[in-house]
Image (cartoon, rainbow, N blue to C red; front, side, top):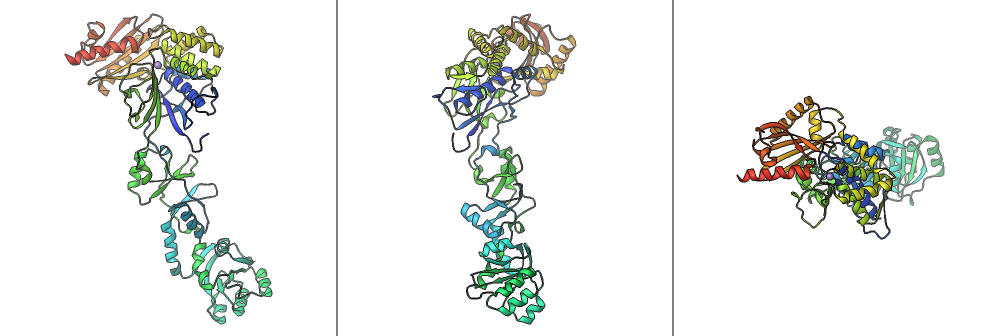
Length: 570
Ligand SMILES: [Mn+2]
């Protein structure tokens, strides 16, 4: 186990996540964690496995879980991965300082010493529950010392603080809190008798007459300085105990003791309580930088999820740009990726799509196989790395392979997909045929007939030259109602116009018929003919049937991209 906290790596699929991208993220995270030597509930690596112990892998998703995926997850007992709407750097990605934590009531001397020891100019003052009650800086302490002589010798502090600061011997105890004036033993007996009251303190050395007056007047505290030279009589101590007056005996002289009084003051009297800016681990670095510009402090507390300070962050910490680390699964095009991908470090890509726009600063592990699903690749990688998967995770992966290959009917499906799915189903103890039926049933289920929802639920964006294309796909068996299709067509056209696409197409793929009905909205009227030889499609929106076309990736999108390139050249 590494000593310092490991860095998080998010394993994340494309926007509008489908079953393959969610399941691949979950399974690959289990495999990577097992290889890194972490406890993994669903994967077990062999002893000599090569790992990356500096990282802990977290499956994530940039969008909602669709009905099919939710069904598959729950049937094998899995939770949906963490929702990560963007991967912009957050406070949690920054190397900030440990906080200096000081309990309320601590004497200024302790806080000061602590700051010098920790080389920290700011302390977080916390209540008994560990929550932040204020901030104290070296400046606050300097101010307390500077103004101590000007406060007319009136102090308030717990007596325990004073005993600690002076290293005093306690001969008699009184009330725990002191709040009064401090008299020095250079006064006459009569003055002392008239001026001192029950809440005051007398600091005096070898003056038995004044000591007696103070105790008889039952003042709050009597401090005997130069104790070696000026012992206090047993009789007076006895009297003090019965009258409730503190008697402290201190080795230092009066002058030194007076100079130390301010150090017994509790830190809460000088700290900043109101309008203290704090940040949380989830705050975006860009927002933190903005906020710091408008504030005077050098360091700000970083709060954990329970409202307790867990770090201190300042402008210095933000000098080096922070990054999130991610592994992209089931996609490699930035337009399909989670928001903020340009600020992240991509460590790996595991995918089965065409190679798109990805560019990296360093060499990375890039696994791309022309197989029917990323889940197939993840399953193969597990075996290659000698990682054993749990029956539940095997069942989950088999479901994702079925989902992405339309139960091996899609032309993208390969022998590899079937072999992996069969061995996974065996490990899971499920019947592959029955599983396929259940997955396809979940896939074709239309949860609510909201056309926008159907269009967005499996939507991918492609860029060809200057054109942006959006292609959605929904799986049906038996088709959608004519009314729903009219609404879907309108949604397709609206999306093209509102979002500035050159084309938006929605494939309504019928698994049993083996083809797709296409709802088509393109700016150029000739695009459908160029792509599929389909004439009679005006600019705007139309519907046509493509027999045998069930794969967006292999049959549909490539034809459109070829046609768009042709169009751009003409
Ligand atoms: Mn996929």
